[in-house]
Each structure stands twice: as structure tokens, then as C-alpha cells.
Image (spheres, rainbow, N blue to C red):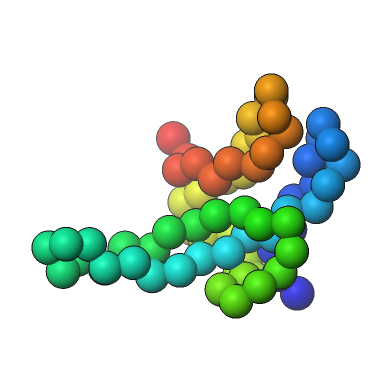
Length: 67
């Protein structure tokens, strides 16, 4: 079951996804993003050291590093 968040503003469900991206210098990074439907790259758990917040104007979920 993919990790999902329900927006407090719109009530829409968003699914967390991850994908690997190679930078110009050859370094590999992981990009995390929310999508409206589960697709390739949907992940089951929140990554360690991250928390979910919500944009107050748009209601879109954001993934932030914990302080």
C-alpha cells in the first residue's frame, strides 16, 4: 500500500513517489514528489528524516526534512 496523504483544504488524496536522477557530475540523487494517482515509483513509507506539511494556499502536500 503506497504512502498517501489527504489534503485538509481540498480533501484530495496524494500518493508519495520517488525516482533516481543522475546529475551532470554523475551524482545520483533521489527525488520525492506527490501525485494524484499511484504510478511507477510509488513508495510504501515516508523516508527517514522527512515530514509532510501542506501549502496553506494551494492545499498541496510538501515533503520537508525534519529540523
